[in-house]
Length: 252
Image (cartoon, rainbow, N blue to C red; front, side, top):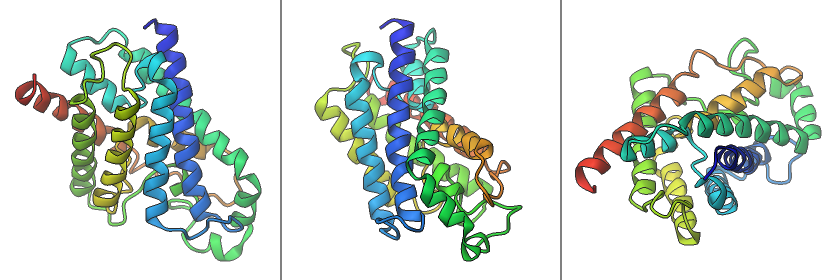
């Protein structure tokens, strides 16, 4: 795979991942959405199908890492770091594009939601904003070590599941069955481990859309919770490294 294929594949794939994943969060959250209040089950399956779609679409271009934690895990497993910056650059750009497209698709709903005094009053504007959860994750209870540990544990499960499928063995990434298995792993993590933090398990998935939230001209949007933002970046990266270590000890 060339660097241009990797960058293009990761940009497209991560954009689709965030468009569909962030889209289900918007659908469930925003007023005047037909899917409002559909619940956590809809969100977890929405993210799982987003992963499946994005992986299947771009596996032949870049291997469909779509996640810096996966990229780091594979680099540690294989000892090859040359393309890591290209992967992560594509993932970050794609995540930001996907988040911006969610805003475009739900523009009217964002405006209506944030114009409602009842919505704006749900949280103080100096804290995490009322629509931040559409873009990025946040804890239900702020306990730093627990929030970090939850992200690490969830990412270990994800990356170890990817590595044990032999993601790079063919040089072309996951096949059809692998994409489906990975999607259901993501659903399982969301259902079982998503409650405390919203399961970022992907630094680009959280940081890219959080930047977009900070930049978008959304009225009454509140803060982007930058004091928490390091956890869904550091936790998944640590988890990816641990998963690669487990793989090298137990499976290599």
